[in-house]
Length: 486
Image (cartoon, rainbow, N blue to C red):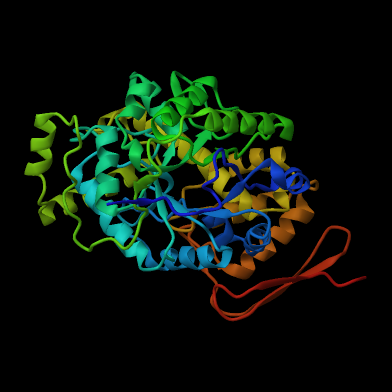
């Protein structure tokens, strides 16, 4: 059924936002009219009480969209409901107009992959997403849940559906609209050797409610959506092609690293806003209903106009999945998680049926991602951005991935190494103290766990100054940092 699009702070024509990052905070706060809304990474708010307080503060200035990256809506084994409840609590705290997550998996076979891994394009994968969305909905407030398409660095052999048809299945089975990452579509098209316009045209564009754009770079013949480079002209062109079909929608510019002067980002924001405002209006003022509670037993998506007869037959034949199919997906995901996280590079003959180059590339990306995930947990040390990043790269290269809470374990390793550097020692000691207040470990296997008991400890900084960290009972208890006057 079609209903009028709800009134939302993000629904104004030409609304453009940006991911809120510490490096952008001063410029954004000095010119709040530069953007119409901001996005915060939900996991950053979970990991850092300071980041959560900051998100609550900026919610008084702009609408804030929490963006999840670790819920793992594509995991055949289900989602972590405690994580879903924490995401729901954050949405309520921020009075969020929408919340978003990825159609991807980050865990398989009990292993944390540490990166968004695209799903196989199959009906069983779409069913897994639908089951997980239904579970997550029980913990989230009654606001739209938008699902983001993922970039593919690892292709699954034997996909039964095309990329666009897979996402059509996902939105039909979940009732959720899409957060269309135009940069990811462009990356997938370039790397697959297909026309980006044709690929994006295969998506269910009538179900797009918001868009992401970001920059990338070509390395060794592969286009990476890095979020650390300017948005290229072809991505802006693809954005215009989408708007020609959908009419203007909210756009978010993602920038997570190598931040330029804010004037450069402001120019990209202005370009995106101009494209949205020049787009034709939608044919009607209605669109598919935004996400609501999802039935426990998803139904087969109706055949879309223009779907080939052979594809329609495939969908019909596969309508009823057997338990063995769910088990097979879980086994495949466990295998991928093992390939991507094993301490030793697997030999090419051991990765079949996956492509050895894809596996090697994905493993390299995960190493970079470990540093990207760890540094936000070290806010003081990260003020020395280049030095901390170099040190972090050396630490993760020399250390196997922890089986859980990888970012925390890596952050503790980086802080410990930084304590031995006179330039970084003061900041590293305080960051490490705050992490120790909230986590126990690392254990012999490198793992850490949340600290449930109270904590009180002091550290002496270079120069003689003393700092204390105090935490009460429970893993979510507030940590207070006390710096007595000398």
